[in-house]
Image 1: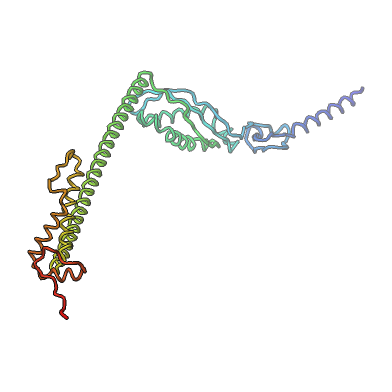
Image 2: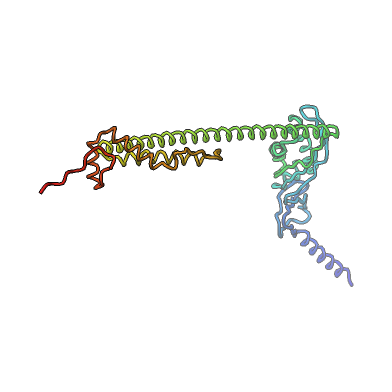
Length: 332
């Protein structure tokens, strides 16, 4: 092989290396910066790209996908001088590879330091109870402050989450006792409220029962009075009718009226629940005879003139004991 051949092979190899040096393939989700003589000139996106060999070179290779970084534990003193241990995570994404490459020296460490500083600032302005119960508010305030701070770096902080908030052991024990006392207090209050409601409901029930009972007595008394009124009216009507019948000479009505009263009186006496022995008068067996005598008394009271008319209406034969003479048959 002559010297010319060796020179030709070297030239061909140099050309091939030059072509390979001018072709750059950027993977998806990444951006590369190009520097010319140490100065940033442009950014290569994903895919096949060409650069000027030996003049341009790749500066920084930035990951453009969302990334997460751990925020290490640190002690934070709250507004009421309670010391708690806090850690968290932050999610960020590079949207400008040039700024992220040349505006900040150590990107990840800068984000961590900035987040830790703002955690102390935000949680230090809150009481312990607020720190333990307003975690969403803390995350929102941190995100707003940190995102505004990293925007000049070409970054976007999407989320910041506080992972753990650990109070001191003695404070945890005190909180446990406080929680137990609060729950016992609430249980006592609920029990007292339940007893109060139960007593109120029982009193309301008794009140309603007494009202209904009084209304029942009132209704019963009203109906009893109405029944007595109707009975008295019926009795007066019966007495009036008997009196009219007697006035017209119908002595049998008086007999029936007195006999009915007599029998009802005996019936009530016999049906009395405390009455075991019924004492009958000696004249009870001759009650009909007594009724007949009462009829005679009535006739004597209202006069004999009514007897013939009554007998005529009934079509009955006059009584043998009557003083009215029988009618004389016509002569011839």
